[in-house]
Amino acid sequence: MKRLHRLPLPFVLLASATLAAPCWAQSDAGSPWYVGGSLGHYYTSNVFRSAAGENSDRLTSISLLGGVDQRLGRQRVYGNLRLNDTRYNDNSRLNNNGYDLGGGVNWETVGNLSGTLEYTRKRTLADFNSTTAVAPTTEKNLQTDQSATATARLGLPTLSSYSIEASWIHRARDYSLAIFDTQEYRQDAQSLGLLYNASSAWRFGVAGRYTKGKVPFNGFEYDRKDVDLTALWRATGSSSLNARISRSTSDSFSGVTGALNWDWRPGGRWSMSTQFSRDTGIETYYQGITNGVSDFNRVQTAVQTQFNYQLTGKLTAQLGAGYTRMNRHDDQFGTSYKDNTKQYSLGLAWQALRNVTVGCQYSHQSRDTSNVLYAYDAYTAGCYVQGMLR
Image 1 (spheres, one colour):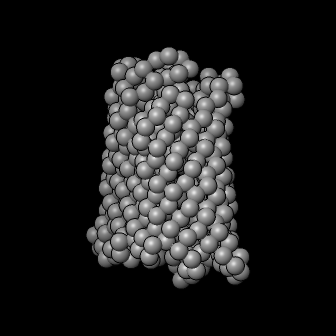
Image 2 (cartoon, one colour):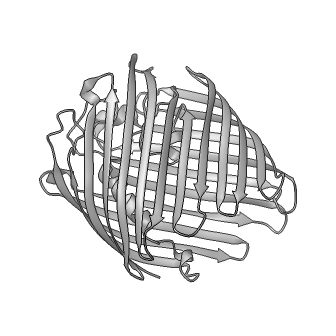
Image 3 (cartoon, one colour):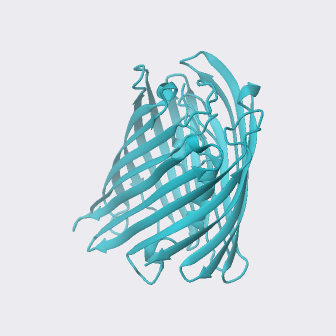
C-alpha cells in the first residue's frame, strides 16, 4: 500500500529553526500576536536522495511569519502562517514557494459542553526518493497536506469524573507531479469514547475508531477499525505522559498498535520531548515523527526525541535523534521490502537581541532498504537568522 513521505532535510531544518526561536505570541508578556521573518542558507550533500549521492547544492530560504493566540471569553482563537521562498544555487528548476498554515478554536459553553475545531494546510517540496512504488525522480514535485479536525466533549474535568468525547478527522495529500498520483489519498476517521478523570494527575479513556480512505487516482479503498485504550499522566507540573494502546484491524493486518508522547520540561536549563509509535498508518506521521515513513497496512516502530539545553542565558544547544524500522508489503504492487531510517541533528540558537535569534544546524539522515536503488545517505547544514515583532 502507499505511504507517507519524509520531509526533505532542508525543510526539517527550517522547521526546527522556527521552533528554536520564541515565536508564540502568548509567551511574551501576554501579547496575542506576532509577525516576523527569517533568512537561512544551507548546504545539502544529496539533493535527490540518490544511492550515488553525487548531487550536492546550496539553497537559500526566505520566510515570512505571523500568528495570533487570543482569548475571547470562554473561547480561544489561534492561528499561524509561514510563507517560504526557497532558491537553489545549481538546481534552479527546484525553486519553489511553500507555506504552512494552521488555525483553530477551542470552544466551551456555559454548561459542560466543549470542543475544538482545527484546520492545517502545508505545501513543501516532496522527497525525491521516498517510495518503492515510484522510481526515484529528479523532477520538481510539490506535496500538499491538509487536515481538518472537530471534537466535542460532554462533561468538563473540573465538574465531572466522566466525559464522552466524539471526534472527526479528515486528511488529504496531493502532489504536483503526475507519477505520484497513486500516492495521493483522502481519509476520514471518526471516533466515540468515554473518558475517566481519576484525579488531577490521571485520566483514562476507551474509544472505538473507524477509518476509511481512498486513492483518487485508481479508486483503491482501504479501512481500519481500532479499539483504543488511552492514559494521560501528569507526573508533575513539568512532566506529562500521553499513551495509547489499540487493538487494530485493517485490510491486511490485525494486531496491537500504540503511541507514546512524553514531554519533560523541569524548568531551568533544559527540556526534552520524546515520541514513540508502533502503528500501521498515517498516525505515525501526524504524531509528529518525521524520521520515517509508513504504510496503511504494515506495522512500523519509530522513535524520535528532541533535547534542548540552555548553555547561557542567550545560547541554547539542540540535539535530536530518530529511528524507524519496518517491514512492508505493497498490496497495490505486490512487493515486500525492509526499510530502516536513521536521523540525528545538532544545533545552536543564540538570542542575539530580545526578538532576534541566530542559529546554525546540522542534520544527517540515512536509509537502508532491501532494494539498494532506494538506499541513500545525506546531510544538510546551514545557518539562519529570525526576527519577531509582538
